[in-house]
Each structure stands twice: as C-alpha cells, then as structure tokens.
Length: 305
Image (cartoon, rainbow, N blue to C red; front, side):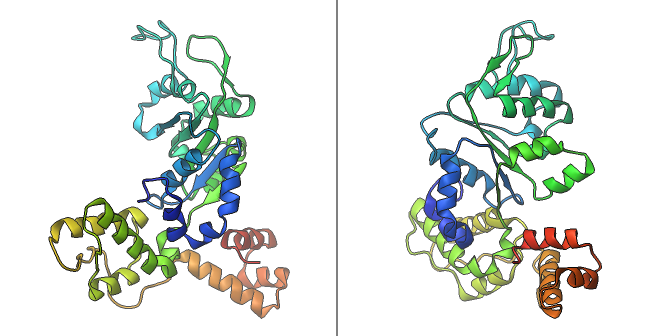
C-alpha cells in the first residue's frame, strides 16, 4: 500500500484527493509537466507512479532519478547521457535517463536538489523537448515530466536557490499532498486500510489493533507521515504472532494536549480575523499585521474562500 498504484489507496488516505479524482484523471491524461509537493513520507512517489500508470503512456517506461543519489559531477551525464570520449573515463557512450524515458514518463524526485548549473538545461528540455548529450549532437525527446518537490519549494525560489522560470514551467499541473497531522480526521480509516493491506500481503487477515494503541495513534503527530505509520504497524505485526497488535509509542510521543501546528494556528487566526471584519480583506490584513497580498496568498494556501 502507498507504494502501489491502486486508486483505492488514495481514496482511503485522502478524501479530499478522492473528491478530486476526476481532476486527477485529467492530470494523468495530460502530457503537461506535473509537480507534486509535500513532506517526505506523504505518498508523493506513489501518486506520481499512479499518474503514470493511469496515463496514455502507461505502456511506456517510467524512468526515475533523484539528484541526491548521484554525484554532482556525474549528474549531467546520468541525466542526458554522453558520447564516448566526452570526458575522462567515458570509454563508451551512455544513453542517459531522459532518452531511456522516450515514449513514457520521466520522474525527477527531490527536484529542489537539482544543481543550479543544470537547471537551465532542464528548462530548455521542458520548453522545447530538446537536449544535448555530453559530447553529442542535439536531439529531441517525447517524454512526460513528473517532479516531486519539498513543501517549501516556493520559498527556495524566493531565496534564489531554485530558478523561478523552471518552477513555473514544472507547476503547469501542481498537486500538494497534506501531511498526516493535517488529516487527523482520516487517521482511523487510514489505520484500518493499512491493517487490511498488511493482512492481505502477509497472510494475516482480520488484523485488529488494541484500543489503547489506537487511542495514542489517533493523538500522535506522525512526523514521518504515512511511511512511519505503515512501518510501525508492519513492525508490530512481525513481532506479534497472534492477537491484536499493540505497537509501542514512539520515543517522541508526548502526553497531554497536543499543540496545533503553525499552519493550523495561522489558518485559525485568518478565519477569526475575516469573521471579525465581516470578510473585509483590507481590515483583516491590517488586524493580522500583514499586507493584503500576503493575506490573499495565505488564504489560497489554506483553502479559505
């Protein structure tokens, strides 16, 4: 689960995304670049693969690359390929991952780690569908681009750590996956879905969870998101030969009332200010000590009408 491309995984995990499934179908059907933002462990890679496997390119390859796993001096060659003799040690030609994705999809994970020097070349590839292997001739490609980025990618653009024009080229279709701590109302159903999936995969149907374990799990902030939840339940299953699962609380579990996240606090204060000013954006912005533009951007981010 969440490593597969089953549609039911997404409808269970995120009712808000499930409600947008017709839109997701259109995203999959498109050939435009798609940017998926969110924290690690939220299922960004699973959604990217779902998009590919539900697209007209599903029969073609899905080629992935993570800039963080390739040494910087070798990344351009790994991405675009090279011809023999293009650099010291290049004894034979290499096709490169973009060329290998021909007719399919190219998934760039952790796009925020893409070296700045290479970003103009990726921008040209996105804009014109052409690239040049190291030491080779320019060529075209037929590839659909999917990118996975950090939640703060826009902030990195503002700081100059990521090209603004490349960001806007990638975000033709943009999807943001909320962290698990912002989807608390879905936790109970999500736990059941993971238990069902683990029971199917590991031949333990009808898995149950102790009531005490469910209570603390519903109150935990899940910094590792879906990945952490699944790993915790799978570990408990392996260590519990029979009976209800009773996973131990994580070391960072804190008793007492759970504080709101900064995002939750900000959303609450914006709603209160708008209610106090009867929806007048100018007065609400002044009350909050921010500009009208900043208030508008924050309302959009939180989905406040």
